[in-house]
Length: 131
Image (tube, rainbow, N blue to C red):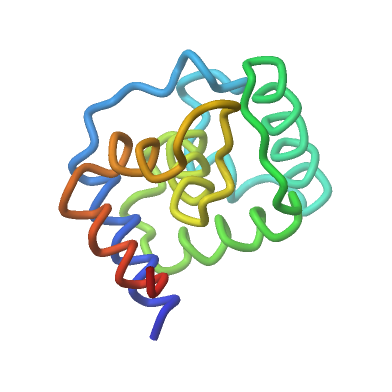
C-alpha cells in the first residue's frame, strides 16, 4: 500500500511540477525515462552513482544506495509509463526528497521537502511516512 502511495505522490508531483532541475543534474535535460529504460543495469547504477557524486560537489549529501534508487526508478517507470518523457533527474530528486535522503548542511529536510513537493504533496508524503 505504501509503495502505491509513494508512486501516486511522485506521479502527481511530476505531472504538476514546473521547477527546473537542470542546474543540479549531470545528464542532459533530454535524459528521460525512455533513455533510462534503454540502459543496462550496470549503466543505470553508474548514472545514479555519478548523479550522487555530482550532488556532493553542490553541497547535497545522499546516503541511499544507488542500486536501491535504480530499482525505485525502474518500478516507477513500470507503474507510470506515461511519465517516461519526464527528466530522470527530476524523478530521482523527488524520490530522494520523499525518502528524506536529500541533505544540505544547515537546511531543514522538512523545509526542502515542502519547497520541492508543495504543500499538498508534502502533507501526503508526511502521512505516508507516519510523521
